[in-house]
Amino acid sequence: MKTETKLETLPWNLVTKHLHGHELLRKKLRQKISKLERHLKHFPPDTVHLHIALERHPKKERYTAALTLRVPSNILRGEKSGPDVIKAFDDTVKALLRELESLKAELRRDTFWKRKGRREQMHQLKAAGFAAQPQPEGTGPQNLGDVIRELLGSHYTRLLRYVRRQLWHDVAPPRYRATLLIRAPS
Figure 1: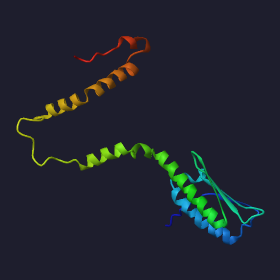
Figure 2 (figure 1 turned 90 degrees about the vertical axis):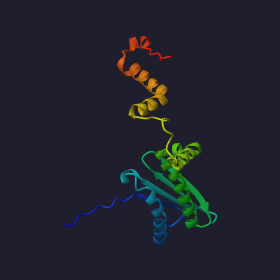
Figure 3 (figure 1 turned 45 degrees about the vertical axis):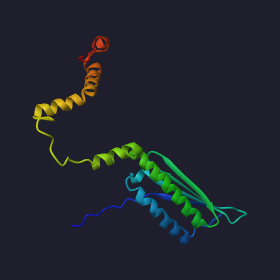
Figure 4 (figure 1 turned 60 degrees about the vertical axis):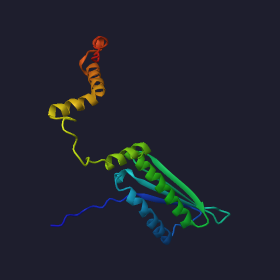
């Protein structure tokens, strides 16, 4: 029994001005926009649309290519000019790819993970390992209670702040919040 898989296609349209969109040009355009398809596979196909506008200057041998890519969260646009329509279109596709990569990085929130300080911390954590020798006898935590006590002690202020916040927002009614203050032991 064969299962048919329906391939989703991304819609696109071509608008030309002072230029004939012949079959060879369409074939070249199709080759160039296939680069974009690889980057758009994670977007729902019915929410993506590519609009291609090619224009020849009426008095000069100058071509302008403009691409408008509609994705769910943004509209990306690139426009380049050149003496050859294919070169102008190729430059526009490259510019649009840069914009698309930037958008995808923003959606993945890469800026929060690719910071220099964070990267140095990750390198230090990856380089960390166990010591060659165990700690001397009697130092460090000796049983499970010591391990838990040390862990809670190192995070005491953060845990206390969390408990205060939970009590403040979740447990106490608004009129009694002012009287619910927990003091840290001194």
